[in-house]
Image 1: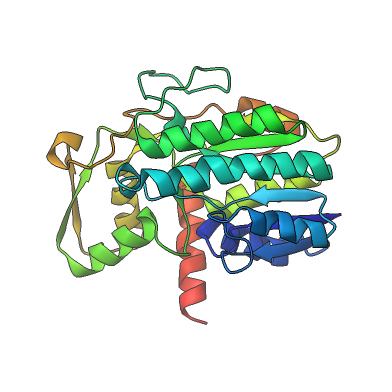
Image 2: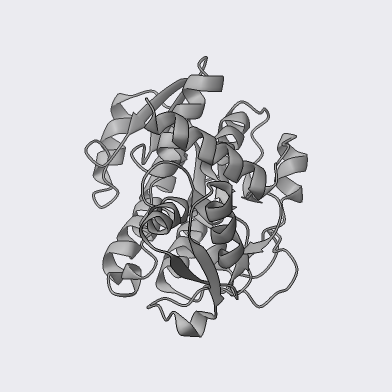
Length: 289
């Protein structure tokens, strides 16, 4: 079985590589980044799969700059929607099973109970809209697909909330973080483990699934724990989203219900605080080597 990973230089792609080395070394995985397969140029994907025997494609590549997407609509659409449609068409033609990563931002945040896969989508911003349109393109063009919606990704790798708060807390004595946006942080190492476990699960169970760590918190709660768990000398203060205006509107509530993915693939999911502990440990390990 040959597995292709798109977006290997991103934090999820790097997490898949790490988990592959640590726990799934028996799998044959090919990693590509923009220099090999550029989603702004979908023909590069077609060219690659025409010259390689691929059984499963994991699309961990995306345009994820939520605020910039409000200004770069064409680029976000090309990568998150148009390219995904071409990938789905090619996977269907080549009989490749597609695992695609999507987002909690397909929801409007009006609920106060966890979102299930059956809940109606209503994105509030361009990023969420392009990701939802990418989902629809897959559903319409590919039979063997798994769409995994996830939320609030972080890791020791690359640019994310965890690394930003860690850096700022070492530079400043006080940070203001919104407390009226509620969801669940997802440690990408845990997500990567789930994805590779799904790759080895037979039969291939198609459909949309939700995955994040367990539990609920605000961005303020998350930032507070990042600071406390690392014993950083910085005070984190809660503020309203209105006090920190952004170009893109975010859902106020985007907690995901994970029952379907847990039952289908026999997954055990840890609380987000456990993921944060592991992330801090791994970050310290990587920085000391």
